[in-house]
Amino acid sequence: MINKSRVAAAPGNVVGDGVYYLGRPWRNFARVVFQNTELSKVVNSAGWAIWNVGDDRTNETYFGEFANRGPGAQGQRASFAKKIGSPIAIETVLGADYATAKYVDRKYLK
Image 1 (tube, rainbow, N blue to C red):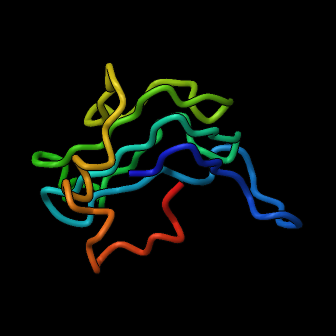
Image 2: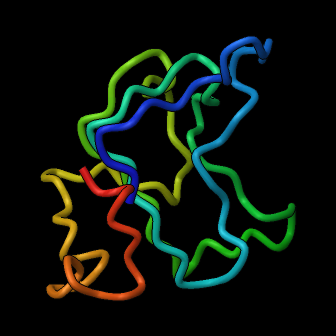
């Protein structure tokens, strides 16, 4: 889950409009959510991309968005993407014990 972030080109880099995607499934059961995030014009209007033509790998994925803003949040999203009606809680992604779990790097939690 990407929450309260900004997706843009790194300072000093020149990136064309719509060059980047939020993600693409590299296998079934991939799950990614962007929420409350500023998406700059570098994000493609489809938002998400398939793996390869003829091997899209989207039948068991969950790619969602909630309350994103900016020019990269606009446009017709990929057919397998979901518009979420409410925010996803961090416990849903990391588990109820995420605050003390060894697999969580707490310096990235805000």
